[in-house]
Structure formats: structure tokens, C-alpha cells
Length: 252
Length: 252
Image 1 (tube, rainbow over the protein chains, first blue to last red):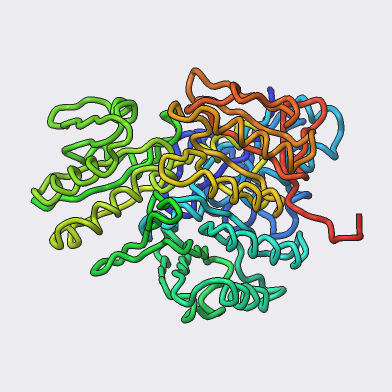
Image 2 (image 1 turned 180 degrees about the horizontal axis):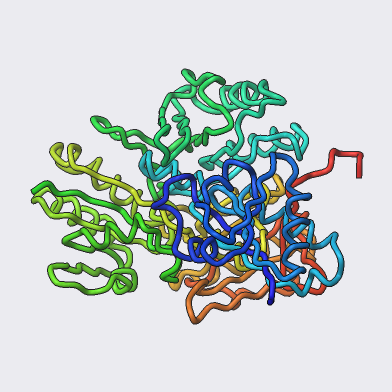
């Protein structure tokens, strides 16, 4: 039997966002590996072995998946959203690169999913309809100075911004700093979306002006989208969008 | 009968990337509106009316969709990839904002899809596994000076970058300028992915070092991903990924 590792994106939560390609892998694998709440989303069936682990053990989990594949098992490594966006794909490749030479011949596939930023944007309208940056605000794996530098450059370029992991338990003050930085560099009416648990029964969306944004509006299940200076709300509706065009300088 | 407009992402091309949520809309609508090749991807069925139009008429097409919904029809506006990323969602909201007041009460929904950048990244490994920028290189709707400014800031922030619409027929020299700018600002070994027609039978992926990149490697069906300075190829495999972590300055 030939083993494999397929790194699967489950989408943000709703069954309707699980692609047929992802579903086929879940139906065909012998083992599911991942963070506890994501493994729980895969239905039990005869012959399927679940290996759920806690957060912050991504490399151990990846090594385990590769080891099992080398033994001939068909292993699905599951992530919420898309596996390539602040999720398990990079971790598996890190483990592959550092691991035994024989692993490099293993069959590996990455199965894309609906990522949280695009699911949140869809519920809100089209705030990411123009150029945007996708930034992980967690400082577990990078220094705060780099986060701050990237935020300042993204504002200078007038990109819209999608923030993953806005508030970590380990450093809850980080997101308060982010809001301070945005208040220094953007106009007070800049639109910010807090989209919690998108596509699940617990979904909650709030649009506020930057001057009204509070750190407590975000937690680890919240996607934060900051509009560009051109992002606008449509009066009389709940919709927010960023126009596709930018007028030539001087023409406005 | 109550009409609606649902703005649907079909994913980059493969049937296996069409979400069940998107499929349900295609099965339930009375009308499909969109650019000719995307409308062609929706199977014919009794009672379904297709309205295919050429490129660059996004606002006319959006107005038509909203008019039909106001008359009680159930209209799917289809885009390739995700409708919120350089696709139809912003155009529909532009038309909604400029249109008759009555349209604002219409039922509208945006159905997210697998966007081309994430599908391309998945085929290549995990090049977008750390912070990244998503930039439309077409200068139809924005001045070249703004594209150049954003590219320089994205390089300065050491973001990975995903480029949509790298080469337009109207201005094929634009992408040559982009490569020149990258050569001025990045190291020669910086990795660039050219991913054409991802997930279709015509798919073709090429990774090259920046110094070997040629403008002709891209066309309008190509997604271009430029790695950050930390993006690496795994020797002995075809995989490329961006590590999740950045070492603290001075610790390396």
C-alpha cells in the first residue's frame, strides 16, 4: 500500500464550504491529524483513526503525519480555512525539509480551502475588492517590530488589510497596540470589520469606524479586516466594499 | 416570487473546487450572468437562461443582474476564483450604490470561492505561508505609479506577493517593468512562481530565480507568486514554502 499526506483546508466552518476535493480526501484517508477542534469536524467512520493534538505542536504533528505516510498510511492533515494561510502546510514542509531523506519521495498534496479572510469579506460585501495585505498578528513566531513595520508599510501603500490571530492569550495587549498604530496613521472614519466565527451558528459581524474600535472586539476566533482609505459603506444597507478603480491623481 | 442576486465564486477551474454552497446556487438560479468563459462553466439545464458578456463591461452586467432580481428573477453572477478578489463582487456593489433606491432592499449574497492565488500556492507547496500582499497588476483601473508604490512597499516589508492579471494585452510592457523593479530591490535568487491555468488540464507551473524570470513567462491566465526573502525550495523535491517563523533579529 502506498501512503500519502494530503494537507486539507476545511474552510471556515460551514459544511457548504468544504470542497468536493477536500471531501474526497476525508472519505479516502486512514488517519486524520490536526488541532483538536478541526479534527472534531471530520465525521467518525469505521477504519478512520483520529489523532487530535493541542495548539503549538505543529511540527510534532507534521512529523507524525509524515512517519505514518512512510509506513503506508493515507494521512489527511486538516486545517481550518486554507492550509497554506497561517496553517499546517508550511509546518509539514518544514518537517519534510528537516526529516529523513526518504520522506522526500512521499506523495504529498495540498488541498486548498476557503480562507477566513475571504469568507469574512463575502459576508460583509467586498472590502478586499482591491489590493490587500494578509497579516498574521500573532507574535509567537515573529518579533513585534516586524509586525509593526509591515502594518506601517501596508497603511502607507493604502492596502486593505486582513488580520489573522488578532489577539493571542499570551499577549492580549498586542491588538491594542495595532489599533493605536492605525489611529496614528489612518483617518478616524476608516472602516474596520470584526468578523467572529464566520459561517458558523456563532457568527457575528460588526463594522465600526476606527475611532470606535475597541481591542475587546477581537479574540482568536475573530477575523479583522481594515479597509483602505477608499473602502465605503453603502447607505441604507449593511454592505461595505472597496471600489475596483482608483482615479488618476489630479483627476478627482 | 422574490428575486435575488448571488455573486458566486466558481474556483479556479476544477469541478472539485466548486463548493457545495456555490453548486446549490447554480442549481437554484433562473439566470446566470458573467464573463463568457465563466458562464460556459455552468452546465445547461431546462429553465436556466445564460447571459454571457465580454470583459470590461462589469458595471453593465451588474446593473442587468440587479434589474432582473428586482423583477423577481434569481440571478447568479459568476466569477472565476473568489468573487471578492478582483472579480464581480465590487462591481455589483458599485452598481447597487449608484442604482435606484429600491435595489437596496434586494436580497444579495456573496458566495466565496477558492481564489487563484491560494490554488496556485497549494500546487507549489506553501509560498504564502507567512504574511503576503495580493496585488492586481492591471493598470486599467489604477495608475501605474500606484502599482509601483505598492510593489516597493511590499518588497520593503518583505511580504510574499501574489499578482493577478500580470500582463494585459493593452499594456504588455507593464510586467517587464515589474520584473525590473523587483531586480532593483530583491536579491537575484528570489523565487518566483508562474502558475498558468491552475487546476485545469492546461496547468503549467514553473519556479525560477528572479534573475531568470522573463516577461513572456506570464500571460492573463497566469498567477505570479513572488516569495519573500525567506521563501525556500526543498532540495530533491519540487516543493517551495515560506517558513512560519521569523527569527528574532540578532538570534540568527
